Image (cartoon, rainbow, N blue to C red; front, side, top):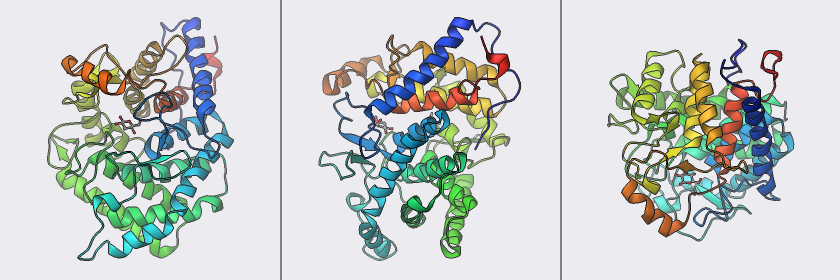
Length: 389
Ligand code: BGC
């Protein structure tokens, strides 16, 4: 939904060696992601991390697939979308039942809603998880339609699943659910609502829906926009959930790629400024000020998300800063962690997580996918003459 800037952007102090390393990391990211892609197409979140091993998320996978699609590996992205489509179509009856009960005196319970993560073969896992999250289904709609448009992929094979996701989101977009970080079931989260609106808008704009479904999707987007405008802003910026004044590192996604607010609007500018002020420390971005997970470090994927937004807003200098920060935190083997502990919000909480779940998830495929996206925004995937060493 955004295009790489056309003006020369290479920072003056970027050496040829560093540029070559930044490019090599795109190739390495693609290799790391595809090495663990499953035969059925799933992108595992992180195969080596105890709490994530065995599972694939629509959220992580959608952004990872976008990076892979931009990299040009059409077959890998196709396979991921096939996996998502199979997950949804195999639950067509379940979703039909949820929809039947949506507006009755017996609405589905949280435990009955679609999960947020699935086993590699598309089954519902047996391990307890904070499973009811709606954002991933909106993200998938955005990712599959953006990929199909970029590479002229016929939509037919994904259409039945697209219809199921649209129906599910139109019926349940306004229910409180766990957020991107699998927390706060009691709230309605602006980044979740933005992902849903972004996905539904993509489908409406791409035109594959029948008129009745398209009308429902448009109505849901309008509902989300007015709800966020009335309850999801404070001091001129978007907020973490409805009714707070705090921000979250995921909020830039409401601007790019999900377009809940236009990238040149005052609320977009104020949101990026608030995230920079409250969460960006030296190029690395925290999830939110109260984050205690592994002590509350800085997340590579959020640094990329902010950089992507800044690039779209024309601030390529800052976008390069985020790309270089991410690259500087890849291991010697190019593997990127979920978060780094350079600046911890709650250092006293780090050890309890290490003891519970082991070292921070590495490599996290979502980190690599986001690196590919930001690298593409800055012209590194498709080098222009002025960027050549
Ligand atoms: C994060 C989620 C992510 C999951 C798998 C969790 O710790 O909060 O956003 O989807 O890990 O990477």
